[in-house]
Amino acid sequence: MIVVATADFELYHEAVAELRSRGVTFTTIEPGDPVPERARVLITAPDDDVKTDAAVSRVTATGDDARRAVDEALATLRGGGGRMVVGVDPGTRPGIAILSGDTVVAAFHVPLADAVDVIRQETHDAIDPVVRIGDGARLQGAKLINDLDEVPVELVDETGTTPYLGSGARGMGDVLAAVNIARMAGDPIESREIEPTDGELQRIKARSREQSDDSRTIDDELARRVAGGELSIDEALDEHRTREE
Image (tube, rainbow, N blue to C red):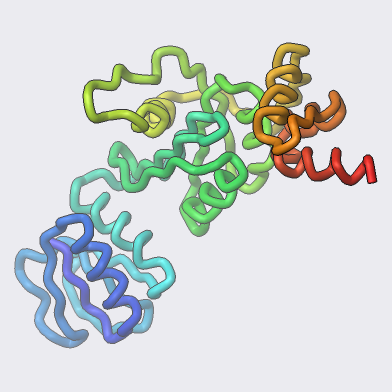
């Protein structure tokens, strides 16, 4: 059982809310109170004076990282403690899965522009994390690899990682693929330079025409910068308009 034992009101509030949202059985005590016999993991603030035996794990946190503390507590409770592995199924909206050992502790499906920040936040203060990125969606994957210089990155052959999705599972494919990617060892990589093909540039230019209000088509140079992740389609359209003024 997880026990929240803290005098820190913000940590108490955030941890309890997070545990309730996940349907986790837990209890709370005041620091100094006897720890329940069924306790397996304590969530406390760094300066809480809580005495327990070696059989009970302790996770310390502040209110700002209560979710991380709950993730760690659940991984410990389920016997899934281990190295943090981040799996990424790249694309315009990458699927991101955070694993602690074999336990999936968090998942995200975010725009490409937000993916690096999410990964940095999740791996902050983790011990020896690794990010595994699928080798599909070459341009988006290369952008992630080149922007992630704080953590080790592996490039994974993502063949067969996207599962069949039954009724009611629409939208889950990218995240489930990210889980599978996280569980596959890849090749260490520090950077990846990919020149977009003519076909990829033409697709980007077609998207710019579809997204603009005036059927505007960006040029090859701007399309190349979009392909490399330097600009979004909207930013490229704005720059194209500015050049004509």
